[in-house]
Image (cartoon, rainbow, N blue to C red; front, side, top):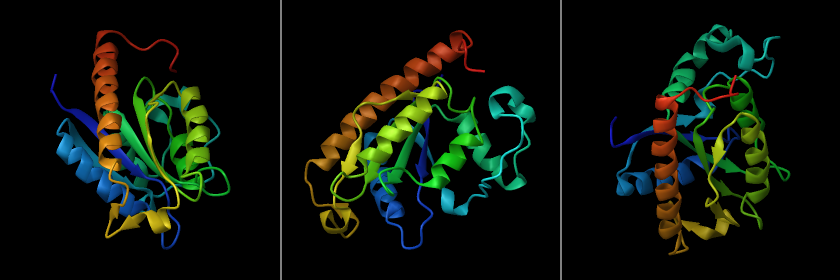
Length: 199
């Protein structure tokens, strides 16, 4: 077992003029400084994510689930991941439809894996979006990390691709330490025995 966990960072917004890639780039720098992960970046703006779903849910269809051809690389990355960071804005007190589509096209890929959140928005910093994501991902048997990162009023709180809050890097380190612990613990558990009830 490699010392490094495989981490997928997901840029959730596909809106024109979105700020997500700026946040994700800074997060990637924090991950590199941490050194405990091999990272794949998934930008949903470049993924085919239809809203119309097949009749049978992916929970029951397993590997035979009929996903679009353009989704195969994404599905492989999710399957191989040990952990996830979701970078999400807050739209109308919740998260973007693109993230819901991503989640709903998959099931076992999330099961018994940790998910951390980096959010941004207005006064709430995207926390409403995270609360809704935690609820949804728990249904898929994912493990959500308590200590996330939230950036309120991001439009005035960042400069030149970096948050103005000097404490942000420290919070990111805490998030990554917790995520690394859970990633390794759950990978060992999945290797030792199949997760019960995930499918």
